[in-house]
Amino acid sequence: MDMKILVVGGGGREHAICWKLKNEKDVEKVYCAPGNAGIADSAECVDIKDSDIENLVKFAKDNAIDLTVVGPEVPLVMGIVDAFEKEGLRIFGPNKQCATFEGSKAFSKDFMIRNDIPTAKYKEYTDLDEAIAEIDSFGYPVVIKADGLAAGKGVVIPENREDAITTLKEMMADKKFGDAGNKVVIEEFLTGIETSILAFVDNNTIVPMESAKDHKKVNNGEKGLNTGGMGTFSPSELWTEELANEIKVNVLDKTLKGFQNDGLDYRGILFVGVMITKEGVKVLEYNVRFGDPETQSVLFRLETDLSEIMNAVIDNKLSEIEIKYTDEQAICVMLTSGGYPEAYEKGKEITGLDKLDDEIVVFHSGTKMSDGKLVTNGGRVIGITAKAGTVAEAADKVYENIKRINFEGMHYRTDIGL
Image 1: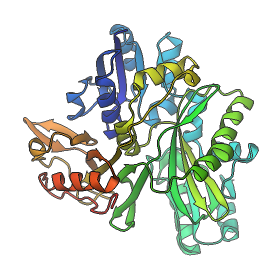
Image 2: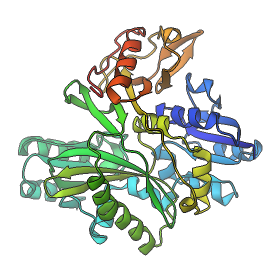
Image 3: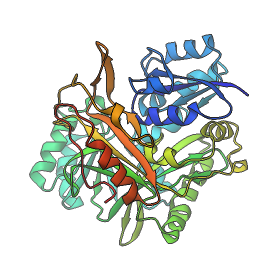
């Protein structure tokens, strides 16, 4: 079967998906909309925004696309899956109703409580005065979340009452995150070690992928501002059989049963953020797509064809697939624009990618071609990825190669996986 596949999105996660699909036995051609300068090596880029569902449907029909894969959360929350399925097109990702698990923090928390899934105590608010009146009852630090999508920036952890009130006013009155802050969720602060689980899900089965550890803070030693992720490695050093079993029994199995009880047709990826606390594992949030940059490390180790897994999920036959990973360990280190995650400049020329060792793979997150030159076009620019017998060996390879790369203001952490 020679499939034509369309990947929706244009970041490092989508580059990893295209890179994986490109060499699979049943895949004839990969398109990516809108893609980026690096993705162009793995797929034919199509100039359609990932949120332009009408034109994506038209492209899929006009080009006889056999399978569409959705990378980012925004088109999923908008209902891209429903639009494709209405036209009889095969698409991988949860439908609009199921995408609410990422589109609304309050929806997710309510689901967790109803299904006895361990999570932090919380309350939701739509009235600013009520939220301010009750904020002290959660203790400090406190977690304040904008209910809706806020491009990964809608979670703030104030250390005291004054900062908490400022945060509430910014979200609810000043609309710092637009309509995402019309409702907020306030939670108790959990202490422990944060990790995430990516899983393939269909109506009958949930299969966790290999573990990955993501470093969110912008500077070495987990210091500085939170980012979308400065680097990952797989497997996570936290992973034990005991932890995997606790997550399976208390989180994944209960989540699948909850989907079934609520009559939700959940098929696609489930990304569960958890905190490993002294009292056990607690769920921080659900996302409905591959994580970025976790995907870069995990797919780098996946040996089974991704297209085969995705088709099985669509057909509710996930239980029939044996999913294999290499024993080698993988790492991805992000090179970012100076100033990220706050204000940064774009359009800086990137040099040195032609000098890298053959086994290094570069996943492009924010790049474009300008006047024949490769330039920066985002906060997270490229992810440098390698695998080896251990994470430390893979890290040595990556950091040795990063020395050959340059662009003005280039920033990266030097302690990922070490």
